[in-house]
Length: 293
Image (cartoon, rainbow, N blue to C red):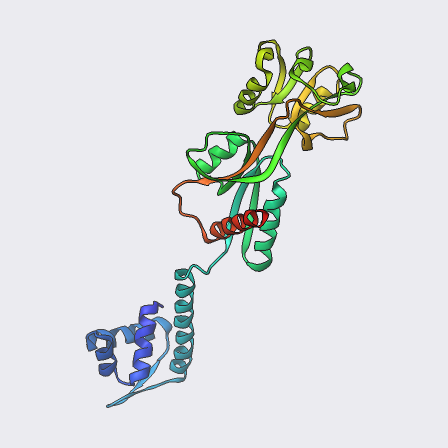
């Protein structure tokens, strides 16, 4: 049954006359009469008792009248909800690296989930290069990335939380006695660092005149995995302080000097139509930043 035909049927019920109903609908009487007969044929029931001056509904006709009105009312309500952008549902896909800044994101997710039924969230773990690619191709809605990066292709918000780099190494190494680790302290050890090119560029400036003397043993996107190499006691890992896993015996961490940090940045694609759920997420994110100011 088409909603259009149900509207015609309700007009006939209202006017109790095919000709008057056709006039109110601005269609030809023969066309309306044919469509009512086709509706009866489709349902396999008689909807009208046709008299000389007016028609009378059968029991099936009365039942369809009530159900048809409900269906049309539901259509009207659904359209109004969508047009007013009140419908918030679906799945929001967020990519992120490991960072305490996800605490802020988690609170926003929980706030939305408590008030909006039918909302779901899919979290993807990855580094900044991977997340940027997935936002560009549309497989992620938002990303939380770390580091100073060119973001010309994205809209972005910088979060107040920052990530501090530390050196992680075996407690038996001589520099364990130092409170802070300088570039000169590290040139005698093989290093394990992040595989992201922008992290390497950041440290090029930090190393200054010692850059040509450093020995990079391994690169990785997962600090936990490379900690197994460092745990052997001969190399040093440079990573964020919160990624230091204390489950590795005999490993300790020390801050770097000069201190070096990375920002946490939420990014999303420029000039892309955002879902109602995405818009709500962004509104709440901005509100959380305003509260911090």
